[in-house]
Amino acid sequence: MGKKKLNKKIKNTLVFLLLVILCGCGKSVEKISEQRFLFGTYINIVIYSNDKSQAKKSINLAFEKISDIDERYNSKNKNSAIYKINTSTNKIVNIDSEFQDILKKIKEVYEESDRKYDVTISPLLELWGFGQNDRTTVPTKQEIKKALEFVDFSNVIVENNHLKYLAKTKEMDTGSFLKGYAILKAKELLEKRGEKHVFITSISSITTIGTKIKNKPWRVGIQDPFDLSKTLGIVELSGKSLGVSGDYQTYIEINGKKYHHIMDNKTGYPIRDKKLVAVICSSSFLADMYSTALFLMPENKAFQLAKEKGLEVLIVKRDGTISKTENFILK
Picture (cartoon, rainbow, N blue to C red):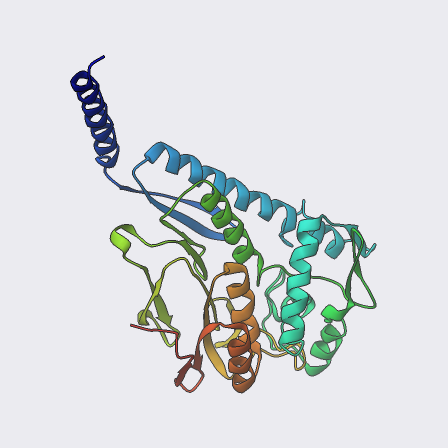
C-alpha cells in the first residue's frame, strides 16, 4: 500500500472516530429523579446524566441498598436485629460485621460528646409520647427518673458477633443516624457505577456526588426554625453532605405547648437552648450523628468538637441568635 493511501486511510479512520465521539457528546444531559417512602419519610434521588437508562438503573439499585439497610437495621422494622433485641427478654443478639462497624462509630460520637449522644434514649421518648402511646400531661419527675434508669449507651456491648444490653438498658433507637448511613451507602454505590452528578435527600439528611451540570453546586435552603415558610439562607454543596437537627422536626403538644424529641439524657427533658443545628461534612452518616450530638452539647463544647473534627456548623439558639464556623457559608 502506498504512503498516500495509508495516510488517507488513517485520516478516514480519525474522521470516523471523531464523529463517534461527537455523537456521544451530543446526547443531551437529562435530570432523572425518583422518590420513594422509606424510614418513615420520602427519600428523593436526582441524577443528571446523558445516559437515561443507566441513571434509572443506578437509582433503582440505590433504593434497593437503602431498603436493605432499613430492613436489616431499623429499630422500627420487625425484621431487624435491633427490633428483636429491643422487644425480647433475651438481651443478646447476633449482628453482622457492618452493624458492628456502625456501632463503633456511634460509640466514638457518644464519647466525643461527653456521652450526650445516646441512642438508648428510647424509654424516654416512649415516656414523652413519641412512641406508641400519646400523652396528655407532662411526665412527672418520678416518671422521668424511672425512665432514665434504662438509658445508658455504655451498657451496649459488642463482643465477637454478639450485641448485648447490660444492666437495665432496654432499647436502642436508630432514628438519629440510620437515614444518614443509608444514603451514604447509596452514594458509595452510585460512585462505583460512575455517576458524577447526584443529589440524595431524606429531608433532614442530604448527600451529593459532584455538582449539578455546568459545574454548578447543589443549593439547599436551611429552614428558619421560627418560621418554616422562610429560609435562613442557602448552602452550596459539591460532593459534601448536610445533616440538620431541629426542635421543629418532631414534636408533641401537651396543653398547647410543644415538646420536641431531642432529649437530654441527664435531665430527661427536651434541650431548650437551641432551635437548630446544621452540620456539613463529607459523610451523611457523620453529619446526621454530629447534628444531634452538637444540639445536645453546650455551645462552646459543640464548636470545640466541630473544630477538632473539621465540621462546618451552624447553630440557631433559642433567642434567635446565630453562631457558625467560618467555613459554613450561608447565602
